[in-house]
Image (tube, rainbow, N blue to C red):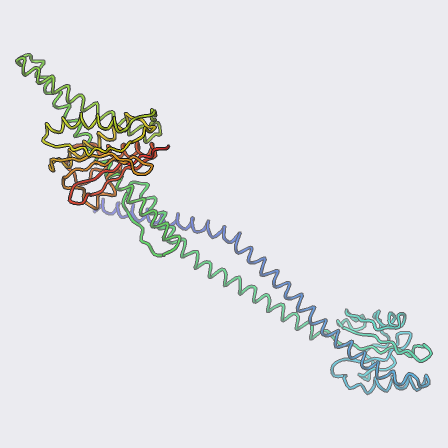
Length: 491
């Protein structure tokens, strides 16, 4: 019970530590997002809010000014009909118009004298005895309409006004009509618009934050799971898979890691099988060499048995040498140290010599090697003849070992377009369809029980590829395996 409790405590601690790591990971992502996306959105929303507020204020004040100036122009045009009267009648007409002004519920109309004194007001009682803003003096000086917006020094209220001079027939100024309105309602409207803009900005930022938080959660949780699985793979749990939840970039990443995990697991399994196979392959000849060596050391064997023992030792030593050379070549290929000794070569002549030599060996095993000769000319090509001989011998050796029960192997070499195509076919059981895509992979032996390291075809494929050619394996019609080597003439 004590051991079980300790194990459970360790597992809980590991889970808590993993959660802390995930929170730190998510926090780092969120912090970068807050510094970049959210700050950028905040700046954009604030700028839009400021632009909206400025536009709203400008529109509101422009509308007020247009209405005020239109009112002033209409009233001034009406009074111009009385400016041809004598001065006193004109003066009285201005006072009477102001006192009976119909728009007093919207604004105040004042009749102001040349010294700024208020002579009459549509409000009846004067709110101010003397106009202390600048528009009246400017209107008297320029004899034109003058607009003003700002604080009224007499009341402290923010106002908007237009001063229109009333000019008598001889150019003498009778007085100034001053249209005044408070900007309180306009400022309240602008403030409400500003508050709405701020509310909209805050709401937009909140919506962006909430939506992106949900979005990031949909990313961070799968990424955390992918990270955890990748760590497990790095720790040696090859073959574990990630559950794919989304058909997007994250799903593609999960598929990639799953594929990587499967390939690593397969490579690990093949490497283990390779080590086991090589260990067995090395142990068998070493056992024979050791056994016959000890027998020969005893000195009791007759000359014929001694000769046989030495022959076995030499044969097993050659097999060990061949295996070691194959491993060294594969290592050089993997490290990029594999080189070719390229020269012009009559590939068909070398191939036919090899067929003649190997055919006699196969006959001793009861296997017929048939060469389908071609009368067409095959030009010389640039290649490494020793390496190509190694490729063909390895393929023939595989055909004899894996398809030997068919007791027949056929080979041919032909010129097809700009390529020299060599085909080697056995009449054995062939290769299981599910194993065909993997037979050229390093360390792969599949379901075959035949002795070997599982890297021969991988080496051959690399040699052919270095020559610019291709090596393919397929099951032939009627049974057996067909290996095709295609080499370009011009390289």
